[in-house]
Image 1: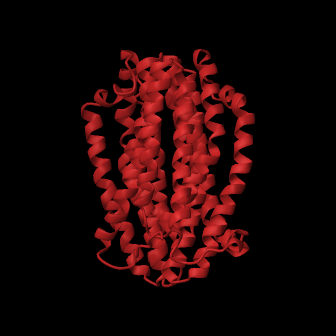
Image 2: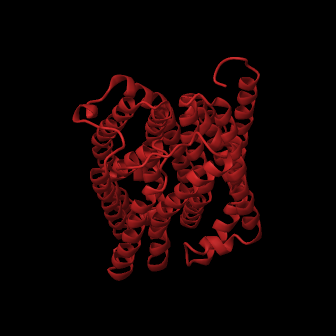
Image 3: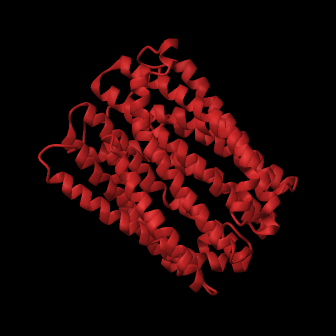
Length: 447
């Protein structure tokens, strides 16, 4: 049977690290097989192909963000039930997560297939990359049910306190994706479309492996067919936490698409350069994302067990761990960013432009160590609307306007434009710290 792991006992720092490291590894592997598309296309195709995959990846990242947001709602609900020692509630949570994600797949898949051409047009995609971008997005959209399925299963495991098992599934996906990438893109010269086919194949095999595992192992608590009929109370609790996070991720990612559209008007080289940096930033954000996910799961289980003080301490441990990675990455990017940007492109102009953009953008990696963990902490308490509110203000009130304004002064360097993201995150940080202080001073309430 699948294992449950208690996050309510032992040293906080050690428990958090033990939970976060496997999740970090799984996230790294997932990002690796996503980056493989850009890497292989960059080695065997032109700047137009790199631009197409970069743009398409950002579009699909928006969809993944929606899915992850709702998945967190499932993780928090299941974690609460496990912490409370409520097996029937846990069974209903598992069934409701499954039925909710099935509904999500039915809605999102045909919608994305229908909107592919409109999205490419709205993104101001360079003419040289337009057809390749359409092929990439359309093919990846067909694989949305597999993306949803994998994240639903991973959300269940995290709710059980198990972050190790999903590593094996994503490792399978990583190996398949990289292998098929080299075969279709390098061997058959299929460019962006070949990379998309490799991604969908990897996602499908990973999801099927996860289903086989769950069917074989089962759970430590009985789950009946009736549990897969959506339970209104469980569904409400999932969507109460997950929907604001899904909307937040969707709108933030949409804002990045808007930013990409702004950059695309500057030409093919800036378009490819920003796409390269966005892929690098996905890797850089893995540590804070992983520790934040651990904070959400630990907060949920400890609240269920009535240990609010332990949940609060977990937040600060998570921030501390994430901050170490953020500071080191930022320092390296000031020193030698070309050694990173050169991984994803063989064209000197793209590598140089991306390096300038990465120098300033990397400052954001320090600030998000605070924001990601705070958002997860609020979500563990069922207060994800807080994360939604400050993210929307920072994104649409600062990031997009700042990018549009700074793009006028980009000239031959993208350094100035890269400052828009850390500026927006700083605004979020001020709001979050104010809210935490306000809560700490209350004698009753969330804390």
